[in-house]
Length: 178
Image (cartoon, rainbow, N blue to C red):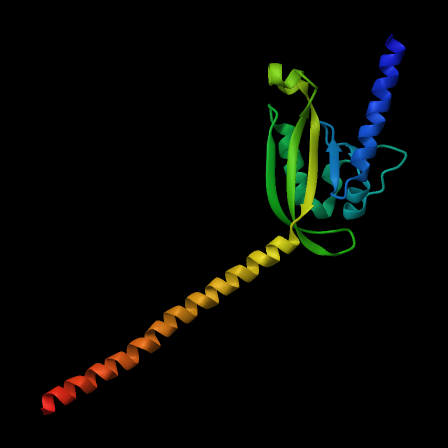
């Protein structure tokens, strides 16, 4: 019956919201107008959001997070379902800097976007953040190691060439004296 289907849909929605809220990575969901529809607890903590009663905050008003705003705004303006990933240097609400992989995807009504691909079926965007700070530190260390090794190889080759040239001069002098 319709009542059973409605109850199942409500239970399924609540379960999905519970799963989304339990994720360790920050997740934001916005509507086509930039109003925040959902922010899990990790996103609220990272961004310093206070989501409670009242009008939902506009994502464009998250001042210190301009790069995230731009990614979300760009996704909302797209005429078709898209996904984009960017690596960003961000500072959380508590002032801790880090590197994050921001993944943004437009959201569409189930089934409609695949069939039409039109803007009318789009209903917002979702952003997830993954902390890649440790990965960036390793990349930096690798780059420094390669740079130091390259320098050692290039200067080491010059040092090796100098004795060889002096040895060649000694051999020439010895040959000339014979």
